[in-house]
Length: 200
Image (cartoon, rainbow, N blue to C red; front, side, top):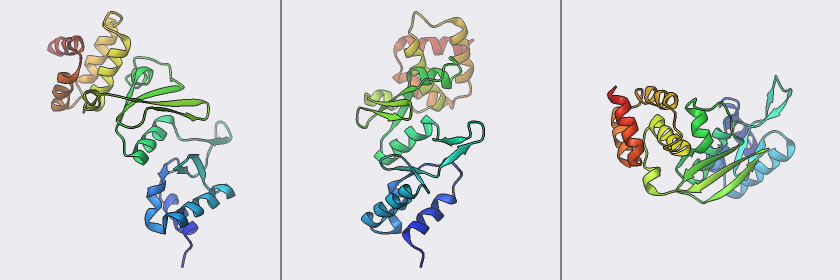
């Protein structure tokens, strides 16, 4: 019979490189203590990597950098949310970058969450989880949630016509029901800009 170590490795190697596992992904392979000990053993051997407590990945080597690299920050943030059973929404500079409104890739990414308010260091970067109102977390659309939060980040008086045009063109690809829902939750000035832009 295979050991828990073997079962953990078999499960991890079935996924693509960079896939992040949480402790609960291995919960059916043995008792919690046995799984914990096996994961510790595999990390100590260097077979798998612990990103932060409760998050594990098979080591990846970048051909370009010729060294082991961590998964991207967004993947890590999503895995933390899954581990903690929390909802998260990207905001700030990351939302701007994701929409193509900024070429700057932020080292410090801020997510709104219904989980704990905290800051987690990942390599040289930080992920900040900021406790938010249920209203903001109720945003549904993948594009519209980013657009609304990006517009709030830029500010009513600093939004340029070029930025507004980019946002409107992106929102035309959003699910119409999700967009209508999210506009009811957006600040009035944001909803007005979106509504006027979509009418053109």
